[in-house]
Amino acid sequence: MEMKPKDCDEQAEILKILGNPIRLCIARGLIKKGSCNVTYMEECLGVSQSSISQHLSKLKSAGIVKGYRSGTEIYYEVVSESAKKIINAIYEEEN
Image 1 (cartoon, helix red, strand yellow):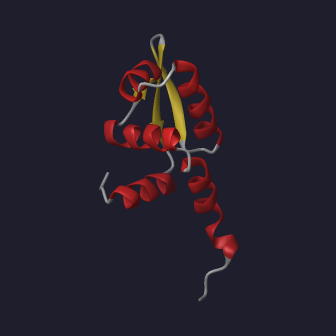
Image 2 (cartoon, rainbow, N blue to C red):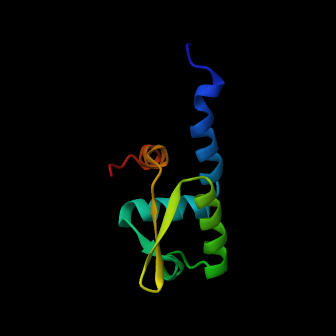
């Protein structure tokens, strides 16, 4: 085996963040939809706005998602290619 644990650091960090079911659902939903705002996530997931905001904060800190403003709304999208690959592998989906 020629791989060292250090070679897997990025993926391990992403898996750690995505280990929470709500964060995994948010990231998967963003990949499938492209981008959306917190209100839409709240309706889809049935989770409070404050809870979604906390989870988005962790996803943003990890560099998995990024938000952009459109008028008065902030829309989020998955920007980490590594996270996209991991999520697509879990669900055996293509972008």
